[in-house]
Amino acid sequence: MKILVTGAKGFIGKNLVCNLKCANHEVYEYDIDTPETELDAFCADCEFVFNLAGINRPKEESQFMEGNFGFASVLLGYLKKHNNKCPIAVSSSTQAVLDNPYGRSKLAGENLLREYSKETGAQVYIYRFPNVFGKWCRPNYNSAVATFCNNIANDLPITVNDPTTELTLVYIDDIVEELFRALDGHPTIDGDICVVPVTYKATLGKITDLLYSFRDSRKTLSVANQSDGFEKKLYATYLSYLPTDKFSYPLKMNCDNRGSFTEIIRTAERGQFSVNISKPGITKGNHWHNTKNEKFLVVSGKGVIRFRKPDSDEVYEYFVSGDKLEVIDIPTGYTHNIENIGETDLVTFMWANECFDPEKPDTIFLEV
Image (cartoon, rainbow, N blue to C red; front, side):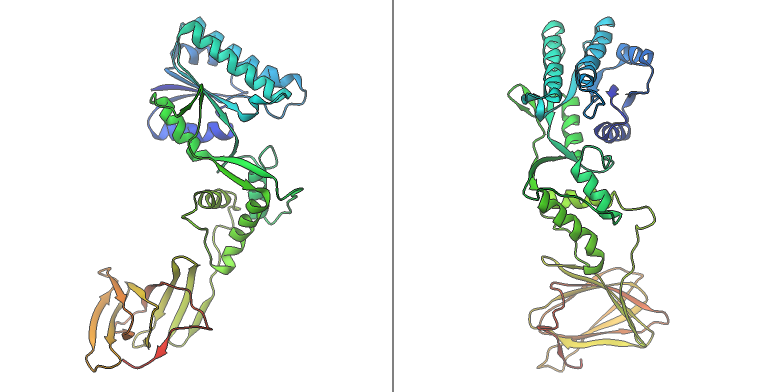
């Protein structure tokens, strides 16, 4: 489909354009630096319009109406000129219900679209977006979340005047998903307004606390709670602001003459993830657990994992190799060890259902 996106270089526009192109649509991109003659040509040929252009930080108050109402008038004029009655989805704002210069300009743009729809029969979808967050949002402009993410990721200070201030937020990928529904003719409608089904409420204090925890997670080895939709999306947003020379970070390797053991991730809900490296001929383990359970996955080298119940002499052996990836469960109640029987390092990815607690290790030494 041939799709016109105005405000194509903006935050929402950039995300939408990238996804439209990846879905093999032909996209006409219009922004403030695009010649108006191209807008004329785009309006003659397009089959759907996403009008995301607008002004929210003008130098003069009058520019609100010029940018939000005035541009919509120009856009609709070109569509009328070419008798193009294709559907239009427009980005408005929740401030359209407020009596301020920005809100009045957004409401005027909405009403213009409503009159256009009555006059031409063209389908119009009006979206009133709250605070939008996600990747590629410009920091230090009009998004507190973008500014906080950028500054905290880059070790810059932030200012929070009132941490109890609550924001209503919508995630950029949820917006793009909803706009694709509009493109297919199935928008989510609430009255005469289209909406993004998923929104979140969070205080500035909660947002900044989470962002600082994300920053510190490289030391604590913790990760965001992926079962919490907002926290999951905020973490994804934070990562997009990492400096390009700081994507990597070191881990503490606990090394001795046998090899090394390195924790990767610690989670309160899903346990601990680690990498164990054993030198040739080395045996590690020889202990059992009451409740703690583990999974071992050898990814390189050759080894054998042995099991024995404490009250039995019978030993069970599982031969493992990086040539055949298979997970070995380490059940409770079995003393176990892992021996490197190859000529190279034995590299094992290990998961434990709980993080190691030196006050309650649940690890009892007993030779297999």
